[in-house]
Image (cartoon, rainbow, N blue to C red; front, side):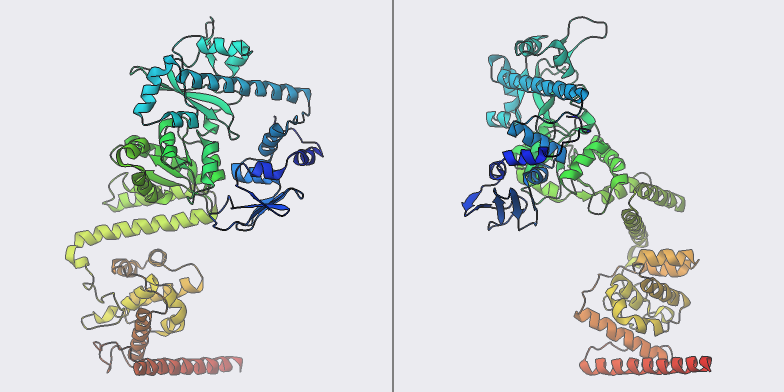
Length: 610
């Protein structure tokens, strides 16, 4: 049916009146009669107790575990991921209702498309039959050699196209289809110079390709002879089929996905991989049709789930396919909509891995899938050496150009921050490895664990560890902002780090090493940036824990010492204590200092007013 056809008023209501919701929904949910309603387990969540209700009188369903509800059309749209028009068309077929036709042209188009669907279905049934006949012996041996039983053939409607020039054509003509219809369905070919049409698929294992409603619209054929060219052959584009807009097994995968906890469909490279995954328990597997993923196919994936996993062979060709997919996806990323990548090792594909190591090995590989940002980072990091400032600048430029393709401003900003952070961490690790033992913790001033000033720290950079601790555990800033603001730092570059830390926190720009370092560099304060970047990474500490208390004590003791002169009579090497008495004393000292500062500020403001 043409997508521009408007459904007349009353048609949808008549359609719903002809269909009993419990009959349609009962095909997907095991329902039990309970009074005037039917009850079952939710198809949308993994609940243990039934909270899914169907009411035939009101013609509605309600799932209390997920909050989803509506009429039978909404149920079909939700469970099969169909558009409204697709759901109406599916239910109208079941109800025996003729879809409305706005014009004679629409009616002609609809009738022609219906005949093409019927022609493809007849061909599919014929191929299935031939697989089980004497002429399908070689095809059966091939499928059995790939680990597929007769049950799998039936589940995936696999078939065999006889190795003859006109057998399929003659069969379809015997079923009442014209030569024009057979050719328009993509089942026959005619040379450009003329001559009699001949079968498109000959001597091949057949994989039927369906649309989002599950109707056969095209075929893929795998040659059985070693010299078959091409090894895989797809239907040509037709009125029903455009290979860049379809995914193999899409309808079955969408329905299987509804019963999994995964983030999205699994995308593999070929028919056999998708079937192998499905037979191993990964029913939400699909495959593109021999091409890189298109925008239309990405749209189909995201309609089914927010984070599909692209599973590629772990060889150079697989990496190239992953990189092409990244370029397609970047402009369309949104909050909650991305891609993950499962890159298999040793040049294996999912079919190989499952047959050699079993489904659990495949499951483990999927559980270790990489997010898109990680694969993007590796692609640019490994593109060339980054051992000079110029090459490092080139890496940053490539990363930012990739992030610039993202249209959503929030996701774009998040990618820019993440990629810059990965680059900084990688370069720091490179420098650390070159420094050898000189880069070990404790070699540059303060040791990281507690963040307290201790003996052996160069006096000028005392306090740097306290600041870095706050940067690496930003919640510390919230509970000690005033104290950090009032603290004195003898080294001007350490003080500059503190100033940027405070301004970033107050401006709610987010606090991490990368943000502060970039701000320092933009000010021209490269020494402060280097001080911060070269300080060893400090694990983030948990709120309200003993380490947080240690840090607060160290900070207040530091401030108290600096007030009476940098490391005055208190002594630079005094141990930090966390006793209740020490805590109360230090807290009292800082509170007194804050009160004194507040009184001075109030007096100054009074002078200004006078």
